[in-house]
Image (tube, rainbow, N blue to C red):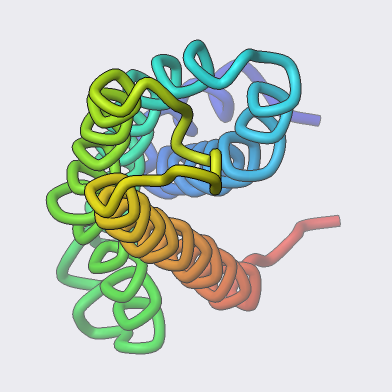
Length: 179
């Protein structure tokens, strides 16, 4: 049975923060990607959904990068030094960070800008982006740009989640449970 001292000493262990950071990262990725986005898409009219996504995903990508960095910094037993020595831990975290950074600085902003451009083009054309009849060449270009950047962002996010899970299996292989 844990004592108050053992609980307090756990507060000083970076490994505990590592597990919390990893759990927060994976939970956030799964919840945002597969639960909240789907619920919002089904529940909100498209203009409100677009407005929400413009606000949520930049924060999501920043938090993702921050949590990956926190997982790396708290890597047991000795922070970044031990992470560098364990290439089989470093590789999935570096992969995940690469995918998250690409979304943060490249494909997230491009997708957001294409969404804004599409709304403006709807106003100029006087019709919705998904109306096939009478679609202007400008709308076709904006839709193609949105589709490309959005698909890249989705795929990068899925690869980042895969990297997070890959790291989780590496982490789980080292856990030891006392009986």
